[in-house]
Figure 1 (cartoon, rainbow, N blue to C red):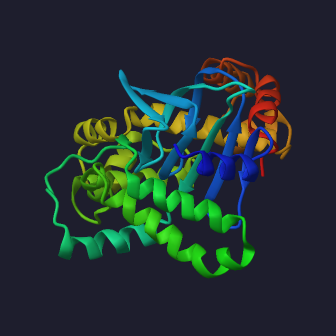
Figure 2: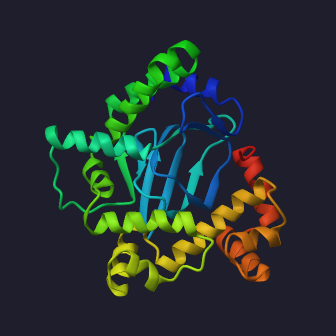
Length: 296
């Protein structure tokens, strides 16, 4: 990775944790610690690691994202993560959340110019080699972040180009399949949106399958193929990750937050939380503030 790009990233993210920027949906991360077996739930988007390295683990697969590879996420899926970093050589990364409407518009335009195999299987996580065009737009984006005037004028176009570069990359076909508005994958993606908007409610697999217009066995198979989780595992993970954020933001007592995310028993919530994060809720909050900074 060019030294100039690393210098820009280090200047924009001087402290450990996430740093927001003047571009909506774009954050920088600085980490100075080796991390192992960390549960994560990324939004749809892409993660570009400029220095250091990360590995994602899902259903026996390992997804590398480092100076030579980036991670594209088509749908939010819970997975485990490890990373390598040190104070002398901190991990520096750029996180871009997809504007799903913009991504869908670009994908639709691309259909006329760059057809792809519509039978290609949609994937939730994809690791791809960092291409010169990606490094170039990242460099121009970080440069613009250092100049408010340049950012105001060029920022929206740079974000659009980042979306475009990911969608025409090696993983573009799988991502575009996930963005389609028809077919079985689209129904599962719509179901995931429904779960994220109603995770606190008494959702059942039978009801989710019926809403998707699928039989329960078929829904279960297609759901697990895309997310690596069963529907029940996915709902539980969404509840726990949401509770984690709410506790870190001090939005109520642990018992109140447990009830708000859909748990009838605070004791069961505490057991599930520790099983998932390997720490109690308060221990996890302390860990988050140490490694991720204040959670906005």
